[in-house]
Amino acid sequence: MAAQSPASLSYRTTGSTCLHPLSQLLGIPLDQVNFVACQLFALSAAFWFRIYLHPGKASPEVRHTLATILGIYFVVFCFGWYAVHLFVLVLMCYGVMVTASVSNIHRPLMIVTQKITTLAFQIHDGLGRKAEDLSAEQHRLAVKVKPSLLEYLSYHLNFMSVIAGPCNNFKDYVAFIEGRHIYMKLLEMNWKQRGFQSLPEPSPTRAVIQKLCMTLMSLLLFLTLSKSFPVTFLVDDWFVHKADFLSRLWYLYVVMQAAKPKYYFAWTLADAVHNAAGFGFSGVDADGHSCWDLLSNLNIWKIETATSFKMYLENWNIQTSTWLKCVCYERVPWYPTELTFLLSALWHGVYPGYYFTFLTGVPVTLAARAVRNNYRHHFLSSKARKVAYDVVTWATTQLAVSYTAAPFVMLAVEPTISLYKSMFFFLHIVSLLIVLFLPIKPHQLQRKPQSTNSVQKKVD
Image 1 (spheres, rainbow, N blue to C red):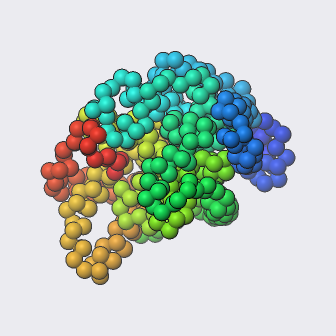
Image 2 (image 1 turned 135 degrees about the vertical axis):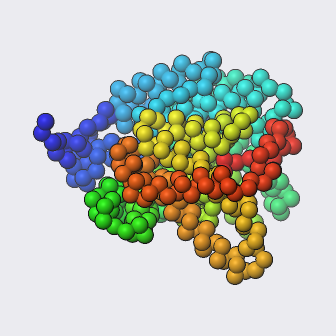
């Protein structure tokens, strides 16, 4: 079979082909061009939605309806006939509110899966469980009235999140549509006690501009770095057979760094779209500035300066971590960390690389936790020791994440095995030895009952 030309590859899509000339001009696959075009159009629509369909000017029914219609149009534009699968999944789950499991064929299905399961559990908390059995967060988010069909469709298919997410809570979304979102967040922070004499009217403009600047920077970094340090470099003959071990570690880190800006781009742009529509307000900081990070999916500074595996995971794909905590970690009676990683792998899809990553993540997480609990307190007695500890744990964390996440971007079995063989499976071996021989403190083995007085645990 003759090899396909780059031009023909860029044309392959089940969605609209009207941007094919732009795809050829940029040398970027058409599905990616369609994705970015939809998100940019969503950004423009978000400003229009906030200004001209303000809750004071339009009813919740009108806002729900137009948000849904725009979302459906974006899905059809990006995925064409395949959008039928998404609509059927959403409609099938209405009424029974059952949890769903779908493969990672397209991003919208992944987001809808999160939302369906989140809403199902929140309805279960509100209608099927006693209040005293709920944690404080479960009690706050419990849905006690079955959503109308319009509310349900708008929550799942609205134009702000249907293409790239992130997942959000049903009560927050309905409050945003009805114009109660900002007021609710200000009540939560006791705004009168913070010195505000009247209800503030926060504007998202500053937050949107900052996030768009970060989006542009991320895009430029990705287009530059991904061509200079492609993922295929990790299975190159020189890397696998000739480079020394330290060189392999260095290039692994650089290649994985080069792969990250595309996630920064997509998630930050999605966050900006929500903010532009007036959704995402989380309160006011100590300096009186409005915070618009309720739906933020990452904290780039904390990711790049993370000194522990836990800290890295807490700031990467934040809303997905919150979803995993909501539907799995808080609810399973045994092995919460292991089962949460397994669910994450199943949610991502069928590529073997996902399972290599998440199954590797289990011993690495347990080992990192054990080392931190056994040794960190020894380095807190002086500033110099703390700085030395932070430097060493930063380097270790960044390399460990690169090693663990490499299969996620390589996807297939053969390159993954080739990479890990070239590195002697060193992190797997070290992590297992730590888990087997380093003592685990008793409090790590105990799980507190889920009650309104229990401490909220995170996937760490």
